[in-house]
Length: 259
Image: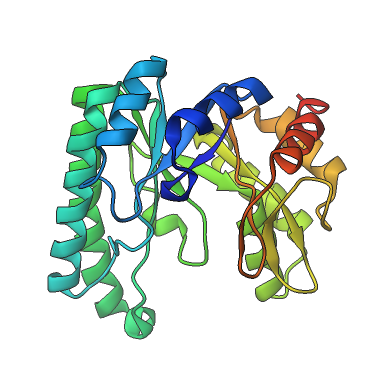
């Protein structure tokens, strides 16, 4: 299934849902960034009106691997609010980042505290997923490592994040992608796709507008065959948040030429 992102800035949601369906998208990955879920009445009404099974993206600002208990406890409380909200909709999957923003995470004793808290969050996530019936996917980013891929979690491979992080580490992103697929192939349920500008390290560009090797993207899709693909096309240039409908449609056509 091919979907795309929906977030608070896409209101009114009824118009947005209709437009995306008309463009050919099969599902939506709804971002739970503030003020959701506290102000979720509109999105709840529209999801039910369109009778769709959405996916959800956890709030970016929660720090589920923070070793500082006060920060972790607050993050876990927000996470639980989100899970209680999404269980109303028979969701497909719940995607989240593992973050900490802790410079001392490099020290083993601090890392262990963060991993212990993260394990507590994973138990909460998997408890809800088993009860409600959705998958839980951890997404790669600059904080991602093998330590966080706990039993029961699926993986969301964000190709753009992988490319930018590879550049930051001085790696060849093509080799990094192949190694990632080799390590996590059976766990990769979802892929977030967008293009990247390597010179500026800008991602979330429309497919075909950046430096991503589309032949490699085709290889990845044929090799892994992720069940769900979400086009994350936004933040096209600094201070321009929205991609146009034309850019979304163009990216969808590029993607469908591979699938």
